[in-house]
Length: 73
Image (tube, rainbow, N blue to C red; front, side, top):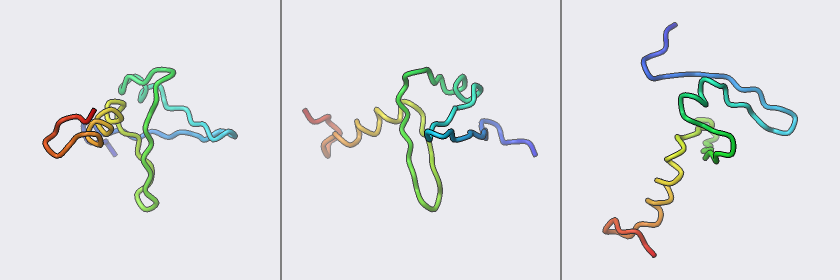
């Protein structure tokens, strides 16, 4: 079965310390470098998602805006 354009699936093995290795193709595609911080979102019914790196900053930006869209200081 061929994946739709822009859609990917990989597997990762969880080590004894609970660590996973992100496959090289995924790291290259999403420009993930050593030392990067990734956000993991979990839903008991839907599973775990790892949004793109920039989503972390966007999420905090949205959380700290006032009703008019201005950043709070």
